Length: 113
Image 1: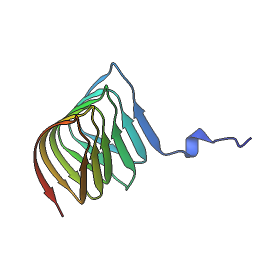
Image 2: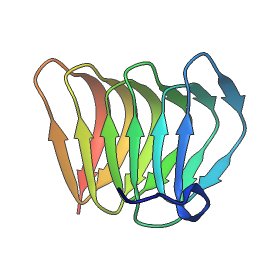
Image 3: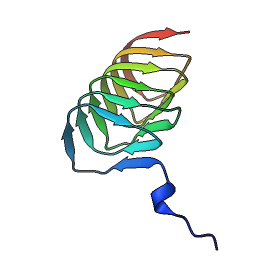
């Protein structure tokens, strides 16, 4: 069995029942289950995932993004945005690729490059 050195791993997990106010700059794979009132910037090409219990009110700048929860604001992606059936998204989206699953609630202004 391989031993994983946690100190060498680059990831963030923001758990449920938390309210975070302010701007976040993160690197490594990131999963958000909490409420964020502020901007999120992923500084590398790692994936960002907004979980079902996650809520972001602010701008998101990232490479790939999967949304299962709720987002209100501006999203700028250099890669792919996937909006899953449990998601609710309002705002403006710029992405290289956008995929919206049936059942998702979207009220967006979108632009794909």
